[in-house]
Every structure is written in C-alpha cells, then in structure tokens.
Length: 460
Image (cartoon, rainbow, N blue to C red):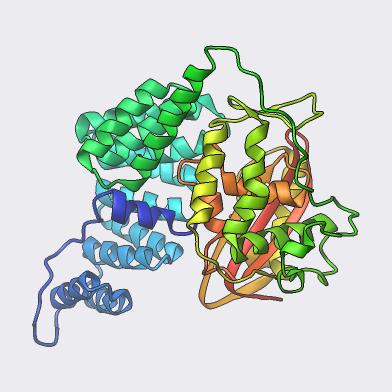
C-alpha cells in the first residue's frame, strides 16, 4: 500500500499537532514588521488557510532572514499542503539557524516520511532523540516506520519498532503507541499481549476506530485458535468462482451476465496492456461499481477454503499461510457490504509505464516495496511519463505472488495482515479516476503486480 499524506493524517488525528512558534494575533491592523507577518500567518494557519499563511511567513522571511521560526512555520504550512520538497527546504534552513532543535528535526522527518524517504526520516528522528532523549514523539514516529518496514516479515525491524514503542509508552503512554505495539505483537502471533495493548489504547481513547477493529480481529483469531484444539474436518470443497485468465487471455468473462462489462471494461482497447493487466482494471471497476455484489460473488466463496490460517484451493498441494485466516475475509465482506459505489477507473498509459518501471526493477533485483533500487518514489516514476495538473493526487498498490487479475484484486481487498486495510482503501478511493497496471515475474515471490492511481495526471 501506498497512501499519500498518511503522515499528515496520522499526525493530525493520532498524534499531537505540530507546534508553530509564535502566538496567533487576531484582529490586528495590517502587518508591517516580520513579527507581525508571522503572527498573522499563524492566524491564517489556525483557520486552515495555508496558502495565505505561506504568503505571510514569506513576507516575514523577506524582512528578517535570521529567525529560524519563520522558516519552520512556513515549512509546516507547506507540509500540510503536501508540498514536502518545499517543506524540507524550509526545515533545512531552520536547522542551519538552529541546528539542535529536536522539534524541527522531527518535522523534517515527517516530511521525509511523506516523501517516502524513510531512511532519512529515521535519521532525523534518531538525531532528535539524541538531542532530546525524552522526546516520545520521535520514538513514536521512528517506531511507526520500523513497523511499516517489518510488514514483509522482517523480524529485525519489528524488534526495533517494539523497542521504540516501549520507550514512547514509558515517556508518554498514548493510544497510538499502544495500538502499534499491539500490531507488532499481533504480527508475531502474540495475540494475548496484543489484546492487552489494544485494551489500553481503548481505555485512553474509547472512540479509536482502528483499535476497535484490531480488537475484534484479535478476538476472532483467539476463538479460531481455541477451536483448533479439537480435530475438525475442513469444509467440503465446492467449485471455485471462475478466475480471470493470464497474459494471453481472450478475456472472455464467464460472469459477464452479472456486470455491465461495456461500462466497466475501460481498458479493453488499451493495446499497451496485457490481458491480465486489463483484467485487473476490470476487476477493480467491478468492486468500485458494486462492492456488495463483488463481496457476494468473489470474496465470500473464499471462506470455504480456510483451515485455520491456511488458505488452500481444492486440488492444490500447497497452501498459503495467512496472518489472520478467515477473519480478514469476513472483515472484508462486512466492509464491502457497507461501502458506497464510486466511479470507474480509466487506464492512463503513463501510469502503466511508471508501474512497469518498478516491476522491471524488482524483477531484476528481487526487492520489495514502493521504492525502486534507484530510490525512486511512485510519483517520481509517474513524472517520468507525464505531468500532474492541479488538483491532483496519486497512489500505488503492489501485490506479490498472485497469478490472475481477480486474485490480485481480491488479495488487495482482503488485505490480510495490514491493520489499516490501506490497499483496499486505495482501490475504493473516490478521488482516483485514472490507473495504470504492470505485471511480471519476481525472483523471490514468483510474481509482482504494481497498480498506480491518480487524479489530474496527463501522459506525455
């Protein structure tokens, strides 16, 4: 999953809000001095008028370039607008003027995080901790990145995340730190400890929806684990719903009678896509158009092929060991039943070319994740083949190991092992109107499929 502005959402909702330096002044006369422009800029910021805030902070800097706080405040305004490169430039200047400011280092770390420059973000949080050893926020943020880096089964990063959340909780026990320490325990199959931490998160914030969802998932998993203590026979095999075919498919959809294929198969004439890549777009458009029907036809039938955490299709000698088992499928069904329809995605060649770059790269290197071996982020690759026109947004999903268009989309919707179900959220995001798909082989995990999403993108 690759969600734009995740750092902003987590910080404004789950963390304390960034601190601006100065006091907002309301009802002032027209500013004349740098300090007065800074104060009015804070007033604009408080009312979410970030562009006006930036104008005033810029005027303050023009009048006095020696005050680090003016650069910091403008950097935070850029950060809230998701203009991370400009934010980083301002934080750099603030740190030149005040190099030992732990808060500015942490804010620059947030901007690096949102720019998907995770190593730089970790460096900044680490430096902030050296300057201010009791800075719980820096431990919390660094732990969150370690946790995300652990989600492909990396025990070293999971251990690092646990250590950071332990320290953050020692310094300031927040609901967020308890929740993500619970996620670390959960991914290590330590359900009892995970439940204990989720309970503490809910004690602090009884309305914490993500904690409620994890609590329900963990209780289901515990119940399933208890039921496995006595021998059970797996459910009788039933026919698997027809799967979409692969590269050289003639793309005859056996379920066409259930869907308005003419409206949903927006990639049918995209000659640069393979049959499977077209199928991925068709499947995404099906679930976006009618999530309830999609859950009934394609997600719910998967339940019969679970035995505990193992998912195995009839006739297969190899099963897939999932993290959550059928609990993730049931949660997906419930979510799709309550989801609203959103518009179809249309193929955009530049987005597919950007996706292809990552598929080719990881097919060669065996790496995983959203960064290329050249450190390119998803939007960097997109900008190689097109431009964004305001208003715009973008995102990216990646899945490994799937071999059909429908399986790719179903696995992203179920989102096993991903607490916030970010891949599903990305597929169902109404803002996205364009997509690109690339599929290929991966030396470690058989296959890779990268899906890019955008609004306001124009191919070269």
